[in-house]
Image (cartoon, rainbow, N blue to C red; front, side, top):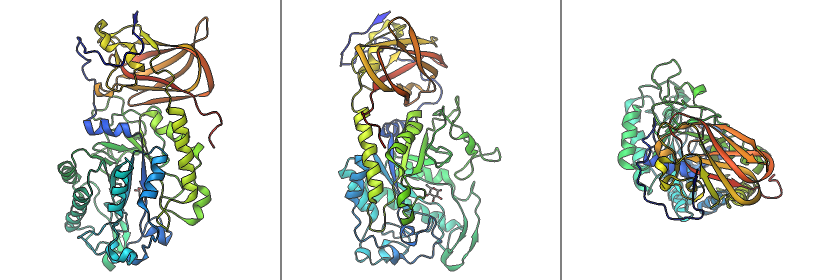
Length: 488
Ligand code: FUL
């Protein structure tokens, strides 16, 4: 048995080599993305004024009149909910651009809003920076306004638009492309149906190269990545388990591309997939993606958002929560109220790790080197970990709080820079005479949250890795109590 000294803050230099990576591993930009946990989506465009979800592309730009638009008010409400990033629909399928692009007149420049000088992208990027959130862009590949949609010229325009967004608005953390591609539209007055070949039309690898060149730190999201995958549903729910690795396959079993993926495999991913392609769970706080007056009484409650948090972030994915601005250019009071109490829940629950600096020891420590001791599970750092010897696939660590504590939530994190190594874990509680199993889970990855039915008291907990594909390496074991009164 190895007993780690409690409360040691500085990481000890390791004498022993860290574990060799197992399987797919995250790139630096993906590691940074995992740390964000929750980000917000803003669906906002002419649809907000026409009461539509998908604009046809023939909307008069002058319809866009968010008279009281206040990017700081929007972003501060998102920050209060604990959002660490915000992604704006810079152009949705209707083709209206929320920034004064040089590529088309179908933009804010052609609206009398702010005398044609408004720029929603600029304002939101600035507000995000001021409030400490990262900023991301969604540029719909499908454009129902453009006369050129379906021709090679449109792809040039799409890339020019992306270039404007990636060069004019500071650092971008995520570039978001959806998979809705082609169909009926205005198309410069042709008013017809245009179908494209999803696999070849966009030549995605070339567009992704452009993103890499202009914003190397940005993750690229689509049904198939290359950095972050769509979770396969729009309910905000990850698979359980939700493996970070994934090798997307097209619906017909061939090559996959945005809009053409075997989406039933996306929630769970592939345990031993070759690519690190973690899931992002997009969901709207309302039934629709855009603001509609009639949905003001159907805004998800804070309790529903909390459940979604456990079903996404709690399974190692990120949550991308859409909160659509209304016609004033503000978040509706209902949405703000839910965001506020969701944020309060998160702060009062996760603000205090009850296991911080508890006494911790393990059945096995890598090379008997204290640099890999169980104390690293409770040191509040993500760059240290408890690790065991190569070939050891089952191991346990015990955490002693020094007195009985009441808690309801357990958080575990793998040291994912070494890959996703653990298959299964169990957590036991010492009842004074014996260990009693409290919870079990398949897959940990970036983060696993277990919310127990009701609060439990224990002085000692035991984390058992019961199955692993490579020697376990965990950076955190934390426990939290929920606020006294249940969140509604
Ligand atoms: C989909 C779009 O068709 C929806 O309107 C929405 O933007 C959603 C996030 O992506 O592909």
